[in-house]
Image: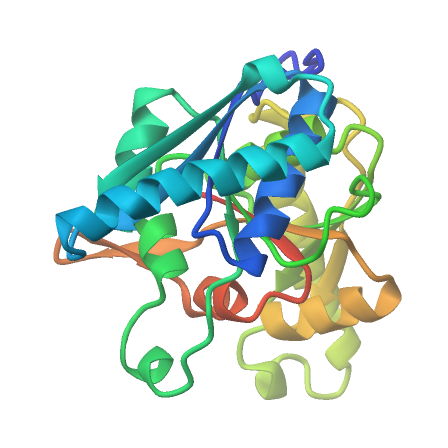
Length: 286
């Protein structure tokens, strides 16, 4: 088995939070500031002014944006303001965020919930979906106010390297939070599997899922005290509803499950749906 012990802050040394100065972004910024007190990481706060804006207006927005973000930092009363860097740039939001994340070697990207556009969201991807597609950095999508530390972490386990990364980052930013793990397993052709004794067929596939989890745990760098998951017979959505009903989490943790399509990284439908309508704060790693 790989050695899995990790010290506090190993997985998150620099956090980047992207703010559009909205209420949604304010929650993300305040959560990011709270996290650097917990993880001892550095923090870059980034605001991007739309490059389509006339230059004389863009320059005025830059000044206003800096003053606004400085006020947010001051009101958050962090003990580590000397580790916070405010950056204002002009350009395309997704491209600038990805570039800045790579430049500062960010280990975590924090963003606010996207602004819902009922008609446009049916036709095109949201900025959050585009961002997670291009980001090499785990993304924390903040939905709720940063009123307290994360206490209950619900981790969707798909036995992938991305999932291992997400679990490790979540443990770093919420070291005292309780982790609950679940894995949804599928019983194919349920109606044809031992019709007289359907429970027996379910046991076979649950055992396979348990063996796969044990192998993934033994061959991944993970916390030593990682709890056993709850194995749920059903699809990911069914399993999530069941686990959400069992307890209200502060954060949902998952690895993005995608596939290649003409050279482009595609998010799975389950992940994309959660990005648009998360039940709580959502941490996604590729």
